Length: 428
Ligand code: KE4
Image (cartoon, rainbow, N blue to C red):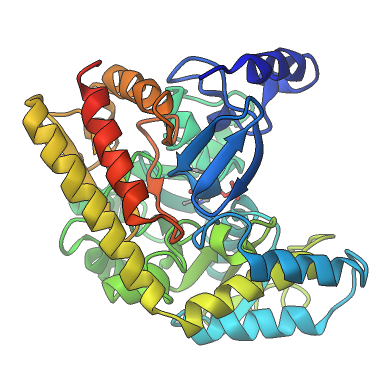
């Protein structure tokens, strides 16, 4: 497989764009080599500028749950672009989008659209602080809530991938208000809540973590957070940017049977267009301007093209919940195939999976938090990544990311992936 044109484009891109990419995780920095420059994609397949085709397990980091260039979304964008691409004024599209999300996501009385998951999470935290009058938040090591300053403390995704301990530009003052604990360590959270009683506005958590690989909540952990928040008047924020509308129509709240006070969304709700959202209990959301004084705004929030794209995709997911069963069956089939290949290979490994989120860790112990994810043999993952890439399988270029399945994947694609994975193990 030649990647000559990608190499040339990467050289050229670095003359104008920091690191040649508009988001660090795309740079292949932790796995090495040249990032693929993509020309087009359809269904489960990506086509790069050198004419190579790959089975895609990134799905644009989540949004492409139905596969790339899903006709109804493409057609909706084509139709609505002709009516203008932005007005900066309210539209019926935003109303129907908010109503659709509220009909799918439990406990969302009011919801505000924004343009990214970062915006959704930073707005939710500001709202929790404005609502409670408290300053501090608790987040979990290895969880990633976007690149807003309060979240870049022991964060996951690219921050963990590049092992950035403290992010320059995040002031000591901001970092002092972000308390951290290991995921799944309820006692650590309880201790923080005692030491900072009356100071903690919110606990923000990825209910199923996807930014240090896929890591499930321990039994009782989320229930413990819920009880603690109720007892201490702390706002519980579920960051469902990844899990929302992916694990179930009602996201992790539905899948895990736990209710948060505020929810953040992104990725799938935009159908590939830039969309985020935050919502939840009316009692809290009513503090958001123009109802209340917690200011939050956005020129392109509720953009009509993004709304019709997201609405078209969510409608399909709501009307055909069998999609979730299909996605889970495909993911379990892949998991079982990888498990057999890895067992035959004979070296230590773990596979974490829930719904259509999955990750493989070269580790001889369970991967349950950032420390155990970081202590896996992630250099071996980098070698496996490239051995798979040259066999036409495109995984997230980091051991600190969940894989995302799309429903366009066929059994043949999964079998090809399992076969390639087994062959690739022989090279690492
Ligand atoms: P965005 O601002 O990138 O739309 O969303 C931030 C975000 C918030 N919360 C969770 C749970 C997330 O996973 C994300 C973004 N996820 C990463 C992938 N791990 C986006 C990929 C990238 O940074 O390019």
